[in-house]
Amino acid sequence: MTATDGSTVAMQADTICIHGDGPGAVSFARVVRGALTDAGVSIHAFS
Image (cartoon, rainbow, N blue to C red; front, side, top):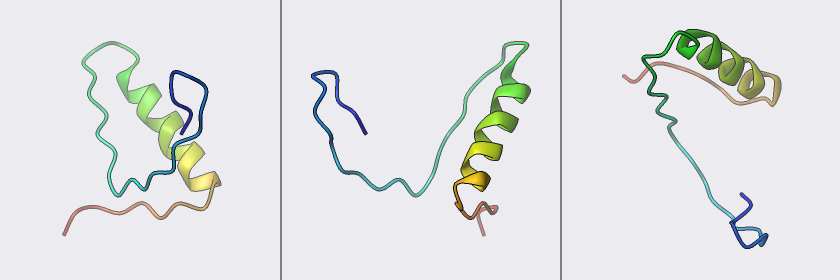
């Protein structure tokens, strides 16, 4: 992740929360999912 000062910060994210009630929320979620899938990230529901 790139910090506001331009430095790189290592991090691991196990979940992503997308909050949106605007007209583009579903499209945005689809784009995020597609980018993650294309990057080889495994996506699954909580169990």
